[in-house]
Image (cartoon, rainbow, N blue to C red; front, side):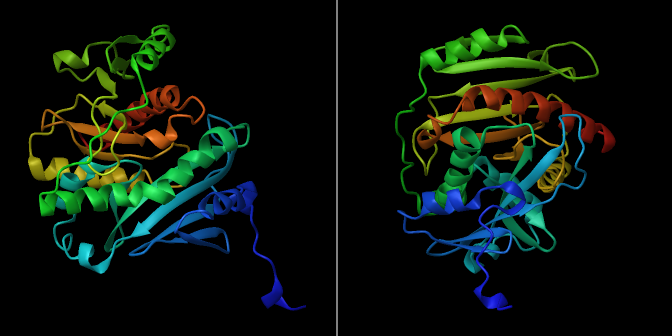
Length: 315
């Protein structure tokens, strides 16, 4: 048997990495399959899309089929910024997130995203593939490019979002059956009750999380799209502790567990003393099946998970 002639498995654990390879073919990114991973070579860095088995197959949401991890090792020039300052630097730079987070893996800082796929799901072509493709193409560049623009004092890109007032109104009509919410112009706001009881995030208590979609805040590197922000109500007034908890949460999000899709980043919230999860969907994802509605469900489940994690950390 000639093992060196063995063809690569294009669908490890049933995840069609071959489809992603096809999407990348017309771009300048050079992709190849290696084991259970797709290696995507950009000019200055490499993105690895690896399919791994779940830590525990059975879950409250049904059996887990596989977990897809998207990671980017930073260029050496960028790595120097983080040495000895991992928590403060990642907290500061994760505000530029689009589809991934700066997180600490062992002794190094990388950019990472994660997708947990369940056996009952039928969302590969309409949602999962576009999400993974966009992350592979521009997830790392969103952060690295935004940092370059900031350091060089270049103007942010700007641009008009494909999401409109009609999309925000659709979100309100959908989620009004599930929670307190409202829409207006290019924005949508919802309050998610946390498991310890009712209340209002706007009043500054620990009972609800605040979720917002904003189509009027372009990304400095990617331009127009949809900014998604989940803010937790817990207050952490020690800046160093707040930054370290954000770093912990971003690392925990990469685990092969029963968790909502992780295509954003934990960072300090707008109050400066709370924790938030930010995500930006570029216009290229506008046609992805139900992606705005999905971000709402992901945010609700993430709020419950983070609420429990913060309680375990004594927050």
